[in-house]
Image (tube, rainbow, N blue to C red; front, side, top):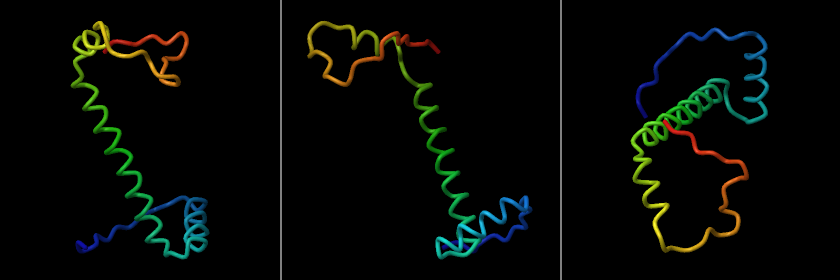
Length: 90
């Protein structure tokens, strides 16, 4: 593990009380709970950023050509688009 960085953190009293309560229930320290929560948030942000960057690379014209070509199989039950669905352009 990397050498931990030490930071001073100011939390509203209600948030600090919640962290303290959940750390106790979880059997961990407040530090471990906060570090875990921050890591989870960073993971969620990185994941959202990854998919947004991938979506921006999409070639929607190629998608339409492939999707609209003849042949293939019918849509499987449960894979239908919702009624009233309209794809929005970028």
